[in-house]
Structure formats: structure tokens, C-alpha cells
Image (cartoon, rainbow, N blue to C red; front, top):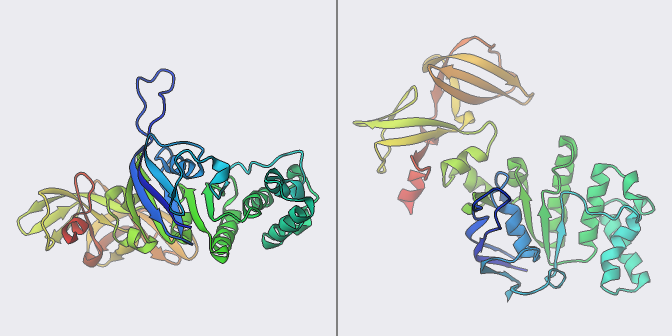
Length: 357
């Protein structure tokens, strides 16, 4: 079932002591195709959860409209939208067993007891929690509680799933496991899904397309690879990827661009006299020749190492394979891949993408 947002604007009343509150959403429009998993990503307060609440019907837009399956949701109650939401805080009834929690949404819809039980058991088998049906939430681990919360949404067999940072309360290893399970489950069901997170790894690994948001605006909406390799703005570029992209203040001098310690050939497209040049950590290397600097930090992670190099007053982050042989304090030379540079105006707009359009 397709989900469409058209020109959604939303503001909230200012908090006590504030004269006015900045708008939560400023004309957000996007289309989520049937069976597509779209991830809304951005920093806290960017509007991603508010966008999800618009689709769920928990908030109404000041202007614009939400369509689910081609039908306007203006004035449609949350329970009538054929959507199910999975929250960060599990939202389980503590006095009910797992079975009773799973059956409760069905009970509220008037489904008979025997049928409710069969549907709950089907959902439990799919999530591998059938052995937990007789337990109370307090007897479950965090990962088990989140599976039950997913089961409460799954048991209704909705056409649209909404996930609001469902993994943020879990440890890193469990997040990785459940991330794979959520992606597999949604695609196996053929459901449409919107997933909110501030974690760029979840966004890159889960999404068919990523919607990057900042301050209530949608900055870019594209497949993960496109967002990573061709970020629309410098904010998108630095938000996705770890270590984050290096951004160098730059200026044009004749046929060259001076970017930090590097002298670069002027690009083929028009650039202003003042700009920023971005280079990802994997596109910087330590060579026999290059910009001379000092290695300030080495972070060995096993499959790769992250390096921090200071070149004059510029700090550069590099990612190299395996365990680095260099040590803190070593004198090194940094070279960059000229074919992998990103060019941004002072406002943050990707100049290369603007030229192509």
C-alpha cells in the first residue's frame, strides 16, 4: 500500500519561556511505494518522528495531506488507517502475559477468542517467541520485549508498518541482530514500512530509500548508495558515514582550488570563489609524498582502523583496512583521491549535483 505525504507543515505551541517554537515540519513531501522500506534519518528534533506520527494519525498536519492507499487520511482515526506502529519504549501491558499482549489488539477489534489465539501463535512463531507466551514483560530481556512489541503490530496484519526508533534501547550486538530480522520480516510480508532512526548504520543497511531530514526539512530522498556517494548537501555528507566526511574550507586561485593543505585542479563545472571540499576517510591514504602531518590517534577496530592526522591547523580522518602499522606521533604524508571529491557551496549545496540538474 502506497503512502504519500504532500506538503506537510506542522508547528507546535512554544514551551514555557519560549516566545515561539520553530516549525517541526516545513512542507515535507515524499512517496513510499507499495512494499518499500523507507528510513527517515536525522538528528534529534529534525522532524522524523513527527512525520511518522502524521502517518499514524497521532498528530494532524497544519497544512498538507497524508494519503494511505490513495485515500486521504484527513480526519481518519488512527485505528482506521490500516497502519501499525512499533515504539522505542515497547508499549507492553505489564500485567498481561506475552500471549495476552499479542491478542489484545485483536480483542479490541472484536475477533473471537479462538481465532485470536491462532493469530497470536502465528505471529509468535514468525518472531521465534512461541516459548515466551506465558511470561510477563518483566520476565523478558530487552530484545524479547521488542519482539513482542513487533508481534503486537504484526498480529493485525497491517498494510503499513511504522517503526519509531525501535532498537535504540538495546545493546549494539542485539541491535544488529534485530535490524536484520526487521528488514527480513517486512520484506517477507511484502508490507510498506517507514522506519525512524538517528543511526546512520540502520539507515544504510535497512532502507530501500533513505529520507534525510534536518530542522523540519527533507534534504534528500534516494537509495542508500546514492545518498552516500552523491550527498545533496554537506550536512547529508557528514551525517552518513563513520568516520564522518572531512570538510575543508577552500578558495579558488586561478586554475586551482586551495583546500586546507591540498592544491586541487579546478573542477569542470562552475564553482564560487569560496566553497567547501569534502573527502571521505576511505579516500585519503598515507603515502611517501603528500601533505605532511602528524598522526594524532589510531583506533584499531579489527577489520579496519580509523586514523586522525593533523596537517598544520587541519584535522583529517582516515579509514584504512586491517590493523594500522603506524603509531601515534608518527610523521606521515596524506594524499587524496582526486576522483572522489565532493564540492559544496558555502551554504552547503552540492555544486556538482546542482550542475547536473
